[in-house]
Length: 392
Image (cartoon, rainbow, N blue to C red; front, top):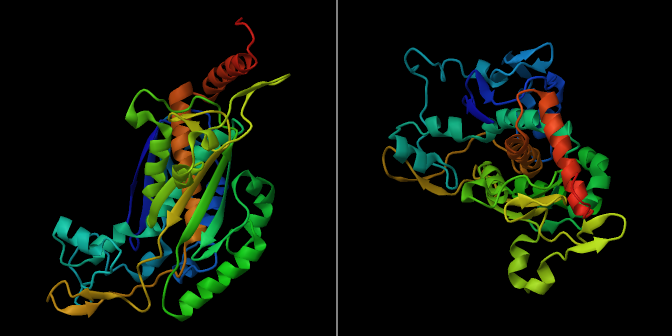
């Protein structure tokens, strides 16, 4: 499977084309809209979320709620486009009232993008580098998620930390708290830590500053055998890390024990393999986080990602004027104080897409019944091997 997205932050719409879905996958717009709404929530979001009410429209590849094997085209309209029609018009001439963005913001793509593409107006960098683009990626990832859910895979997330505040709850413990997490204004499984996180965000807002944090994903129901050890680019841990690192603001990704494993001895870190009567081969711990050698091992997948503070500051850092070279303050734009809860939903989508792609690679099939037959056959084989039973 593969997809391509297009669209600017203040353009008419965001668009994606997905190729490689099996025919017969049931999709309703409400299935995607639910996760788009989750992406827009969270304490610390800015004024843009008061304007946009993201909804998906299907333009091709779907008939009566089922995929038909051809490319699936998705569109999300930007409501803010009404305020930018003259300034972001695809055709015609730039209006006289247009003001170029000429003060690159430290930490954003403004300066590097302006150099790379030889752009005078740095807004042309901002428009595509903006995290607004993650709305369409959430829609795309939610399609992959629907495919996985047909086979019992479930994806959970929560905010494990914001600024100096860390949650006391983590790992698979968040599964039983999923309902409470969705009700939390900060998307956190630890209510006490969540209250402290809100206070930290309010403090940063009052001081014209921003905050980052840690998000954690837990994925259950994955079959062992997704990914591969035989080539570097087929290792699933590398693919997942790349997908999540591609989310705006993410600066670090770890799986399982992650960076903590560097301080442990091998005897303390690696998960024993034991034989349990009645169930066969099992693992009493999951410090590997569900992946070994780039392959899922059947245990819950656990991923953590670090998000940096948003670079657009109400009290901007020093910068320069792109046109004159003189010292100036970085540009200010309407922005969030903290978008970590939103990033958790985006990370769910990014992981869902990579896992769904690996699932399709493993089981193939041009229509859903064919995929199901291959998966069922393989899982019977896996259960037989784990119980050390002779082959059929």
